[in-house]
Image 1 (tube, rainbow, N blue to C red):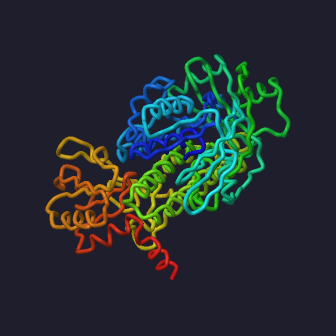
Image 2 (image 1 turned 135 degrees about the vertical axis):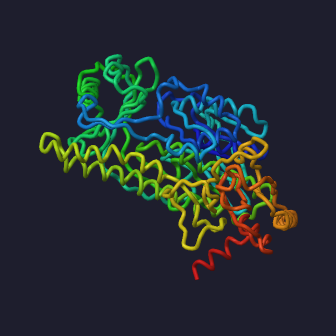
Image 3 (image 1 turned 180 degrees about the vertical axis):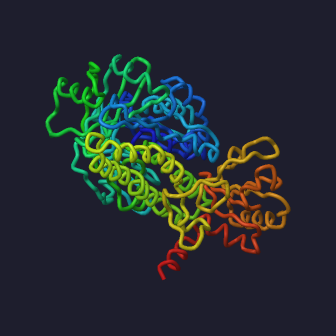
Length: 531
């Protein structure tokens, strides 16, 4: 059972649906809210949509034309100050993924996901319901669900419950999972408004979709504009000074100040939120799991939120399906927290918090009104370093107990993109002799890429897989025509497209390798590492 039918809950349902797992999704909101959040979808997220059979539908749902790329602009002082540079150009890492990234409002993504869920027989989607209470023991979970319109309370049981119910997760609270918060003591406003005048102001930023304004007044915290559609509709985030709600006149004045000119904003929506980082101590309590914002949340810097949540869904989904189908040891479910929490912690510390700190330091130390030469020198350095963040953001599970990562490796969001098949890292695409992309022919179980003269090793792995009841698909080819970039003739890939093991020979260790990859030796590995 999944509580929460946003993108993460629906993504998890689709992942489970691929395996025919019976799953009920409970969502309290029957109507999709048209709030334009979660717009920047990475290449990795589009790989998930490709797996779930909705990539084409997602691209057709795009609101802005292709002439508007997933490109940002940072300005100093205001949009019209004359100081600006472009950033967040994810095409720099495009060769390492199977497909392109995309940009569309979250409500369009949700519409596509809901349509797909309706076609899968094993998935039951219940709108207008919400979880009221949760109880569990070692055999299952009992959930009381309140039907909003009727007030009727229904009791449901399931093997597992996953809370994808947002930052104020009732499932997390009922499961007793502790949340650690780091508050920046900033209140933020999200505005939705129309402004043909702003469209005119932004004409010289051709192809850009979102705009960050840095200013000393905000101590480096972003004032953030984003295009939504071609009807002059925009969203806007920025810190606000008080707990009181601001009037339309005050909100318009804030927008005008960040724009550098009066843009006559017609306010359609205003919502308030607190700028903080929050991370659950664990993403699991016995048979209850949490994912997405229920497990980790952060300010909307860099567009990480929805992408992190959908990766949670992919990571947890295949593990639950394998346990319920009998080919994975239940101990593997502990690795969901062990793999995903370090990636979020690293994203929060090494990318988001670091970005906030870096911006604060810049506006405190440089100002063109004070020292124009020094400011422009540092501004140029900033503009030339924007690609570094994209290149170094490579979430990996190198320290996971179910991959054969190098000694001392730690799971993290920091890493270098590479074509080499490295345990714990995402498998990069390469063409096969058949013309297929290697990533597109991976199975829903484990996949063995076997290149060159390695048949004896393949047979060892197949015998062990059969004996251990592990689905293992073999994909044979030559180690040439680009595939030599993998640097290993034998590569075992998990259902989530991460490399679990890679090498040149099995050396009689097929049983040991497969037992570790499927969680059968997880507890032994924990004890060994602790010792």
